[in-house]
Image (tube, rainbow, N blue to C red):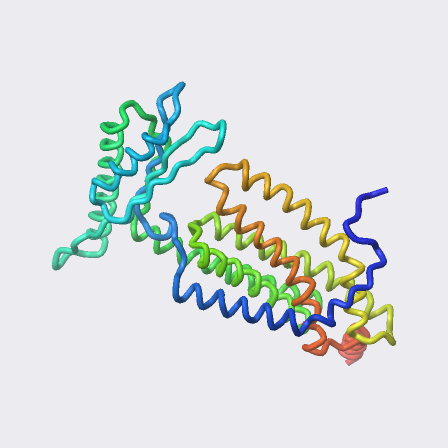
Length: 336
């Protein structure tokens, strides 16, 4: 006998709570936009430009609390502007130290072209990276340089625009997919649910000021796909019931569709969350931002599939006999 989170014959009146869910989602979306406008996102070096230097201890040793304090004071004493020093590695792991240095300002010489200014900026970033490495070696002795990333202003600006374009294009393609597969009423509910999920995820990062990197863009795209998959499963059942039950009220039909897929939805979410929580706690700092976004996205994606996308069909006025009408229209067109 298989494990089931909920019985197959649940009769939860989800549509009954749709107005409360709409009000809650509307409030959270407005709050997310407000936080994004007022607090902004804590962009990582991928988007802001700058230098990242990751160092490790000599072979057979490990960094101590004093070493981390020395690294922080050494980096700050270089007077390179906004500097962030972060310890990586958990209990029982070899520790490392990551130093983030903001992009250094460049004075543009009158008459200097944009290409020449960009070269000067990139050279300064390389010099900054070398300066940080030399200072840390003098302060901490023999250390290993694990990684050095230098992101110039041109690259960081392109990454911002490309990241936004990727999310917008993904949502637009999902809109077309749902529109062709179902009807415009279904596509409207699905897209509003996707916008809801992406907006709330961005709001979480604005609220907690978690570092927003390219990995988070990947997480947003994954959330879009996951949420759409959940929504399509329910929509397929709604379409099936629309054809099967001709006399049931639409509200009852939507509730039965959600209930009949509820066990599958919750089981999928639970198994995905188990893997994500393992990555969050054991995957190290490099994956923490990505997995945090995914965990939150699974929660809001499951919620929006049940309480946002499907109940919206009651407001957009999907017709009970839309499939039969489509067949009649197609037959009429063929005859003509």
